[in-house]
Amino acid sequence: EIVLTQSPGTLSLSPGERVTLSCRASQSVSSSYLAWYQQKPGQAPRLLIYGASSRATGIPDRFSGSGSGTDFTLTISRLEPEDFAVYYCQQYSSSPPWTFGQGTKVEIK
Amino acid sequence: EVQLVESGGGLVQPGGSLRLSCAASGFTFSSYSVHWVRQAPGKGLEWVSCISSRGDNKFYADSVKGRFAISRDNAKNSLSLEMNSLRDEDTAVYYCARSGYTNGLPSHFDYWGQGTLVTVSS
Image (cartoon, rainbow over all chains, first blue to last red):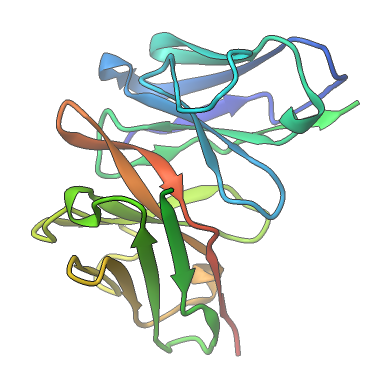
């Protein structure tokens, strides 16, 4: 089973700042089979990125994903007020099981 | 518009049973694998189970294997999760999610329902 470790656990930032979130896998994620999700309080997760770098339908271009192998990154170029949320990475390289990272919370400073 | 609507959650005693349902609309349900994903209060996401588009392949997390059973009715556009021998640690919001595909295999989760809360407590 591939274990995903996200860092940091929490980020305190201001609107307009650039954000970089990290997701590290315990073994190589083949073919960049990695996705990112955003979850706001009381809501279901929303798909942001799949295939490590492809934006899902309707996702603004301030969100971008990169990486390969064991190290992946989600970048938000300029934080908007609606971007304060918890972000999860998920791998589908070695599934089942489909596994998630523990999440990174982006909070308002 | 793709919609997934879960139902069936509630309070159940340890050792009890519960059946969750997910009603799908806005897409050709019979063409997609679907998953159950859960989230314990204040915790992260945990994949629970997956069923293939025709229902002939089923997968389970080790934590629920032998206790939970996933099924689908493509004629009724519905997904179910039968949960038996429930434990305190099964307390969570349960989401159904549609599977995206990569190279013909189930991959990411592109649409999610709003979830249904299952509480296991005496």
